[in-house]
Structure formats: structure tokens, C-alpha cells
Image (cartoon, rainbow, N blue to C red; front, top):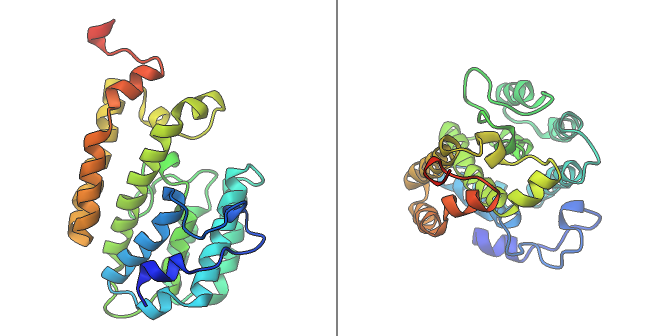
Length: 240
């Protein structure tokens, strides 16, 4: 079965906050269509497609996202969410070493990159979906390139979360919510840093999925960062 078809045909899970008030499984928003893209990425990295599209793997992913929605709705803290998801995943762990490594990273008050730089970015706002990485501990196989899959995750989610935060910056500033623009800094340096992260995402995707890399490149050409920064009250040195 095609990966896209499996997701499109999937029934909306009941009593799941992530799909609350949704009538289709993959609406047109990055928070949903990242799933088939990441599943395809894992397949390209050597993961078994039958496992990726199995009902039990879908249900595990959905439970993780239910708890992610609880965090988004401020029904729990990051640490509470991470602890709960770790408990959910524990019975189906196939890679115990990876599971232990991820636990060490996820059990923080806020997810920030550790010294080994394998997990996370320096910005908590770009790590807020990282409990989904626990799906990796259910995968095995000699052909699976775990390191490339991790790099692919951060390339994909950095791109999607930056897009989301660029669209939501005014509301996020108003409600004191996590946002990469605030994390990086509403400055020339912050603007340059965001552009560098998008370009890095494209570079990694060129290795795994050139079509996705082209999509990032095209979308980047449409983003007017100076205008977005001006819209939230930032003025460049030449405008002051």
C-alpha cells in the first residue's frame, strides 16, 4: 500500500485531542501532513514499510499526538507529557539503548539540545514536537539508517515549525507562547539565523528526499522575512 494512501484512508481516531473537531485524518496543515512525509522519510532511511503502516504503529503515533495536544492546550507541562509518552512507548521498545538515550533528552523541564548534539536544537520552540521521536525506538533492522533519520526529523520539523511560528508570531507574542522568532531574536542576527536553519533543512532533505528539498526551496522564495519582522515592530538599523 502507498504511504500517502494509508494516511488519507485512515479513520479519524475517537477521543483524540489532536484530531478534535477534524473530519479527515490529514487536513491541509503541517501539523498533520508531517506524518506521511516523516513516514516516507523513515522508509527512505531503510525502515520496514509494513511496520510503519501497521495499525499498532498508527495507534501509538496517535496516542503520542493526543498528549502533544494536551501540552498545546496547557493541560500538562512538557515534563508531564514526556513522562506519560515514555510510559506508553516502553512496552513496545525494540531499541533499548536508543530508548534510554531519548529518555535522558526528553526528561527536561524544556527540551533543549544536549552536549552530544544528537537530539534537539538550541531553541526549545523547535523541539516541542520531539516526543514523536519515541516512535524510532519501535524500529529495527540492519538496513535502517538511524542517524540519517534523526537528521531528517530535525530538517523536516525545523522547516515546518518555523513556517508555523512565522504565521503565528503576533498571537504568540501576545500570549507569551513559544516561538522561534522570539527564541532566535527579533534582530538582524535572528533573521539570518532563521534563514540559515531553513537552508540547512533543505541541504539535509536533498540527501533523503530531493522533492521535499525543492519544496522547501520554493517555499523559502515566497517568505519575506524582513516584512514579517517589520510587522511585529522590528526596524533594521538602516530604518532607524
